[in-house]
Image 1 (tube, rainbow, N blue to C red):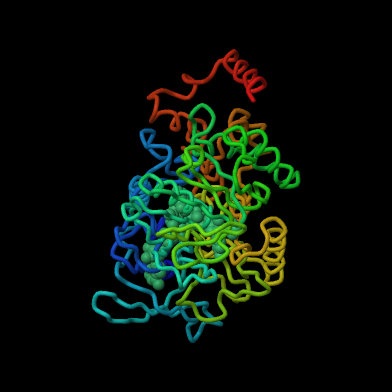
Image 2: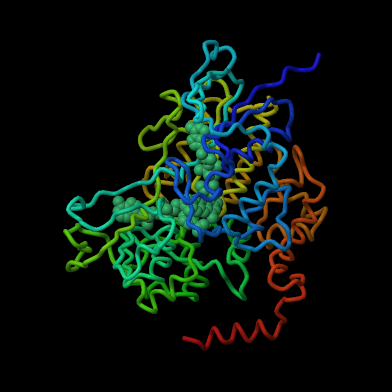
Length: 527
Ligand SMILES: Cc1cc2nc3c(=O)[nH]c(=O)nc-3n(C[C@H](O)[C@H](O)[C@H](O)COP(=O)(O)OP(=O)(O)OC[C@H]3O[C@@H](n4cnc5c(N)ncnc54)[C@H](O)[C@@H]3O)c2cc1C
Ligand SMILES: NC(=O)c1ccc[n+]([C@@H]2O[C@H](COP(=O)([O-])OP(=O)(O)OC[C@H]3O[C@@H](n4cnc5c(N)ncnc54)[C@H](OP(=O)(O)O)[C@@H]3O)[C@@H](O)[C@H]2O)c1
């Protein structure tokens, strides 16, 4: 008799939900259903003119902050014609192509209201899921063998409250609802926060505003997407031999090295009015290519934190009143899993108790996982895909989780390391370095590349994996659902990077020895 197929509910059809469906389908043996509360898949990357509560939101001009090869799915290289930093529509199309086979599993306009342990949970590990049809208003409850929570965590705006804020007569908004900048025409705008959203908001509004002030309490390291020779910065620096220095040297030393040898050559951070007061690896860098020129033209002026609001403006710390019409809070997002039974995702001493940022360690069955709840130093998609591939193995009964004690120890170790490197914050526990985390998850189910073996069996591939861009195809060289095309995809990744601009291969546009020498000499001479 064929084994009984397990019923799995995936909650949310954003990128993580779609990746989870694809991985479960690839493993096979599951009956899948995905509940999506909106009427379309894609989550954050399905552009909406009007933002929806609890759904990630982009601006019409948003482009990815990692390049196509660095963020690619492990068995689905982007087309060579695709742009390196995809616009929101292009990344949406990429994921639609990737998940075409599982779109049929998605039920739209279905909002999950409750997820509770079933009556026989202790024995079976099953879950009761209550869903509301948002069109008809009907609710229904079904029982599932497994539940994957894929509702994202960059979608619930965090609104700070400064003294006197309620006196202010201008407009205050959050970047979550910033869709255009025409309302800022000839206005004075204050943007609060210097993450990617803050820089995007400052740069975009400054194209039409009279003046933009960017207020930041701790500054940020800013990276250009465009790096040396016009190549995507991440394809140059997101390489094993560089990123894994963090495993051997103190992060402050590696940070100092990166700032001095790369970042400061683009725009010396000592020239900022508010310099970042932390090491490069202690906070997410902010990506923006126009910020430097906006500072140089004075269109954006950097200011410290807001001390308080007045009727017509704000007072920055140590400053006089700055009159303004609009304040845009680019102050990030908080997290919540509103439908989960209490006590599933527990916070203890500031620590979010999730094993490998996914599994509640105190549950006796590994039948529920939180997906994509990560703040990744590097691209988020490859880590999300490895989580999905691992969870498929766990739900299929092919991988087991360790004991509760071992899981708690692992969670505490990550949290303590993160607190000492990043400082405490509401999401400190779920911060990870991309390559290290991908290796960690891949090794749970045998997909971490065996570099020692590759060194002797395929030295060319070894050199590419260590010194080339760190692409996720390496996690398809071995283990479950390995892929024959993985080696070729790794060897040709720079060709796909160079192609959209040059219509040539990487080797054809490489610098010769003398040009490299001249560049090095110029660096010695220039101030
Ligand atoms: C402006 C912006 C730019 C970003 N840029 C990048 C980037 O360049 N690179 C990167 O890696 N990350 C980026 N991110 C982070 C982004 O969160 C991830 O790229 C990715 O979209 C996360 O996917 P997700 O599926 O986890 O969550 P989401 O995209 O938030 O999708 C969650 C889905 O769950 C659904 N849902 C929620 N609650 C329920 C419920 N109760 N019942 C049913 N369905 C529900 C939502 O409708 C939504 O479709 C960016 C985020 C923002 C806001
Ligand atoms: N692809 C893109 O172009 C793009 C665009 C936007 C966002 N994103 C992604 O979306 C995610 C969220 O980015 P985000 O910029 O919205 O949020 P974020 O990275 O969390 O940054 C929030 C900023 O707000 C500041 N802040 C928070 N609370 C504050 C307070 N009470 N008072 C003053 N300042 C405060 C923080 O300062 P401190 O550092 O001092 O805490 C930080 O500078 C990130 O993963 C980002 O990469 C990507």
